[in-house]
Image (cartoon, rainbow, N blue to C red; front, side, top):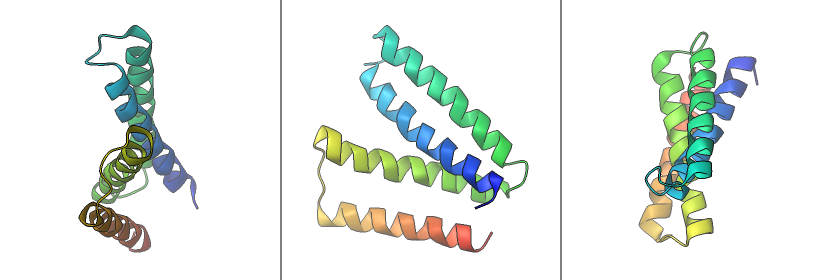
Length: 106
């Protein structure tokens, strides 16, 4: 995997981190989760910007959002006990398939 894709994957994982931090911050009312959210958000955007120096903007953005969405939903299911019904899991599988397709065609 080349550097741009590595940066993009890290950016996507940080997007998952800040999304979960956003929930933990309770509307930015808790200082430490708020700080965590802002730091991981800035790092995620920075890495996305670096990846976009090389990768097509549409692909990079879609993959970044996709990693964030899939990761956040999976952790929501595992950590917060959110619903994991068959349609939701099928939707995640379709999203993951789209991400793989974007990677393979870029």
